[in-house]
Image 1 (cartoon, rainbow, N blue to C red):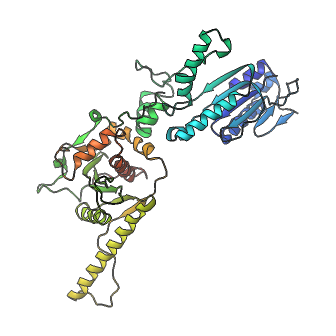
Image 2 (image 1 turned 135 degrees about the vertical axis):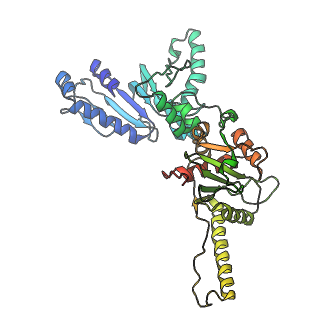
Image 3 (image 1 turned 180 degrees about the vertical axis):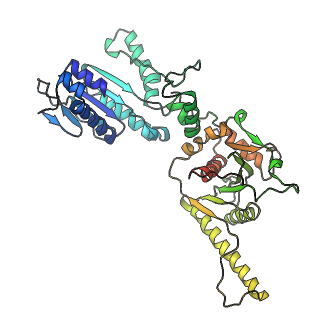
Length: 437
């Protein structure tokens, strides 16, 4: 904002275009510029009120009263990449944060941003200037395209003597440089960066804070950064898990049928230890029939007495929540019938709720799967998520789940890391802090 005002202070005839990722954000920026021009006492004292009887003051366009030469373009116009690009022309174009999380998740969105940038650049007057400001979101976003592709072509042509092909000049300043020095210690301290890495996950943190997007195929959950626990530490003298001491949670990412090439239907169980870490007690990896999934969940609940169990319910997966409800009702009816047969209750007695049921919720995910999975890398790397020391020999194909997590996203099967993210979210997303009691 201050840069645009300073440009107009030096040359009131300039036409400036600020392009952003959305029209809403662009309008907010222009509104803030107007507020400075109108309400900043120091500014108006030195330079006067540029908005007093100004020729134009609209939501997306402003012409200051210091301009003398008539022209169609505003002193400052703003546009979002969700808007139509006009046919006006500008002396200075500022592309400000035109890349966002949509570019991270979608090839189509990255292509859209590139087209928008090219359309905007076409509005530059001969001899005009372009400034780009923003944050990497993906290793193939428009900034990477400019640096690694377009700029190399421009440089090659410029070296041949074509002065119209002068390459862009880039300054890339991450939160921490290669030597470990903080570039913005007052706002991004070591403690703040550690917290951001946990909150955002490795992928977003690498892109936004370190300006170094992960290349697709790079391993997210590094094996050497995994943290472990001894399952025996959570058992009583009889070798049984201390169900009364710890809170247990479960999650399931259902598959749609048992085939030799089908997806796994992982069912994960974790307890929350004394310091609030999620310890993966069981990672059950099987390719199962729908009825088998429900049976396993109910059998597990008889062992762990879940505080909460989450089932992904996107598309036809909603079937599993319905099957679980139906089977619980059937179990309840069986218990009631046995009570009637024993004479414990009358046949006319209303059937009571079961003494124990699976406290479950169905989760409909709207965020992209990879973005969700990568968001827990920070928790994984600092030990907020822990795995069994005996993972190689733990039952129910625990070792397969570990290998799927460590090899993500290099393998096509994402069921295990997806189920892990859902379990972590089940425990922590609502601000729950279940500890041992």
